[in-house]
Image (cartoon, rainbow, N blue to C red; front, top):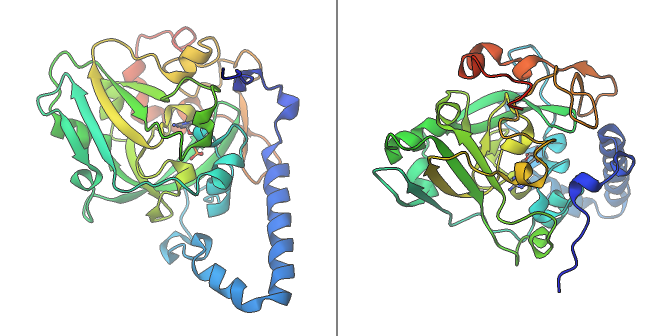
Length: 319
Ligand code: MTE
């Protein structure tokens, strides 16, 4: 019999390492390790840095800013502090445990209310001409934030290709299930597969990105290789990783965190500083790598591009 572990929502906040402590601790450990190794094994250190993606960040990102003139977070903040329960519940688990995951070859099943269902290869969607860099502010429901130069293409490209019928009101997305490569899936921490959903207009919004990379390079496994969703006006848990299925459905999908605890994680999950999470405020946030707290912006600062989709909805009820 499988012993049920504690739900992530049961973890008291005292057990969660604040991200600045975590990032600084990691940096200290890394710098100390590199410093020691450099003295003893200089050639190996040089070899390691050649294959280290942190050293390969293309120059075009050097002075890039968000449209609110914010600095980008460095590569290691984005790739070493993650939520990806398939690889464990702690922030450092995905980077540590995702090494055996194989993101190629990759097939995405498209089904439901569409004229063109089928199994599509990743290469059917992506090509040299449709990839773009997009700097997005990301806000996690746990009240930390990060500015990321994602690489990807509009989700609407995929949707238009699938030709949804009038009965398609939502899209339900699923993550791959591979317990042999994903140690978290050998536990019952969450119900697998991880599921997310978007209403059709949210999915078609030009901001909604099918993401394949970060800092101009392929997504590392811990960030959801080879294909994940990013909607910058929603809390990070909507950004489902390692997607293998898109089902065009009529009813609102039952997404993983809604099933887990619907009072704390509503289906819409729009960033809203005016509605507190039941256990903490959402009015402020901490940018990874900073100590001070910033004021959280409505729709994470993307109001102009998204608010019309929610006109007439009571956003204290439809969280
Ligand atoms: N997708 C899957 N399959 N499994 C997960 O646990 N976590 C979500 C989201 N997508 C998650 C997932 C949460 S809670 C967040 S905050 C973001 O991924 C984190 O994305 P990042 O690690 O790239 O910052």
